[in-house]
Image: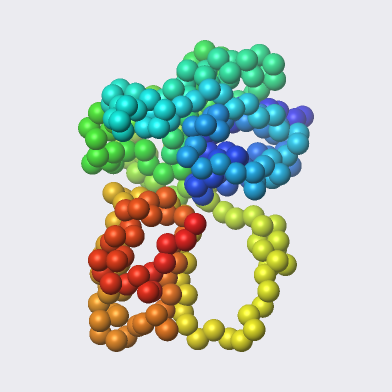
Length: 295
């Protein structure tokens, strides 16, 4: 028997700039092989800073997709670059809740799903999942991936309080809370000891062999063996959480000592999402000939 699941995800094609797109996209593609029919509820493309059609073809034709009204407070509701903090609680896409709840209820009436699934790291997605689960009474799977809150994260106390409220309600309401590492499962089981052990699940991030096979077929072998070591980091680097300055300082130290040079080492940071922040750091460290920022 084929069952249906309403999937709530902010990061979904045509959005670009987040590796988190892959988890929802691949779930939507492969759940059908396990007798689950996905229905995707995402946000309007205007809410994303970057969009593109390169992954639209990866969405199965059998998967209905609804992109509900959503704005990015920092871009659409700001005056001279400033906007009230309440317009960004729990995050800058809280307006998505206004469009997604009625859109979700419409999808529930039309498709009659057996379950609801929502995915972090956009906290509003869990807020939408919580609301729809309460109204519909359907079982809800909260895909946290990583921890929503830490002792000092998010750094803003109001945002941390909003995140913790959503997290606590999700843990109490959801039928299953899913994380990508066993360590995070243990953290949440310890944080909420009153919850049954069956509530916690671990589904690690993975990869799709089909994508790598396509890349191998498209790649041309090098004309000659490369002697220069190349290091690549592909994906967002959050300045507040993954500060690269110690790494830049280490590269600068190695360069100053003569242990590395542009002839022996190249470091590519691709699609950091914060190039304007990192470029001055790289130039100040004197390693622009070794470290490159690329789209």
